[in-house]
Length: 367
Image (cartoon, rainbow, N blue to C red; front, side, top):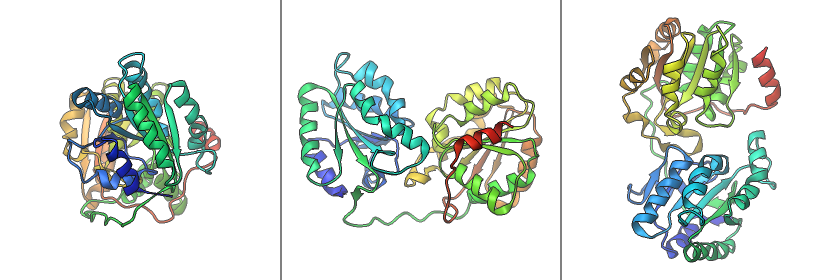
């Protein structure tokens, strides 16, 4: 166990006062502290590569090391700027990576996390990044030495944090969430009542896929088939496009705002090349809900103007329960690629289960 305050003190002693990254469930107690800072000290990035790049820019301006936080699943997104810009044989830019280590060998986890967790330390070695593992307070001494070596050698370093290691000395009250918009479950339930037997749904990672799976089982709504993006955050739209190219069935991408922002350029490919059977739904709660509720800033985007400029044929919007059913029908009957933005409140189902036996899920979807 390590108190977040002790970790932050170690960073501050080493002149680390700027943080950027992509929210992660393992590090969410740390994020509670970052959320109180302004943009000169904290920036939530759209993806991990962008976070590393922000950290590079910060160093070029201040000669100080940035703390870049991420889940190990996002390490792949970060590799390009780490190797092509920050590496000591290129521009030699130091930074400190704070990595939530899902699927570490000591922890039982979901299949996608176990695969990445097993190779996380190997990836760091291949990237020539020295690292330490934080498990208890005395490990902060290792972190202190590591940061000093980063400054001295102008090198990126990393620390790995396993699940349930970080604790808080005091509990921070969560902001009250507005109940004015429908909940995700309300929309998904109505969608499943309306779609046909041949409809294919490809759903984004996090609560969306988990709720979709659970609502089907609990409400016995079995029209259509689902492919759950248990990993690969931000890639649901392109998996949907790839499937739709050789199919005449109705294809629905069920997306989230954090995921969509991660690879926003995909919207242009979707809008430009999508067939009339392709439909894109954005469940927009302006937050990374499943990893702590950090703001995504998607609430400030005019998606109607955006998607129309990117080639989508139609735009629809839902912001209240009484219009869900009628708007879904209009949306599904439209010639795509079409876009439906659904404003939702935070809140999920109790005892939310997770997809397992992923090969069986894939085979059933492909039948």
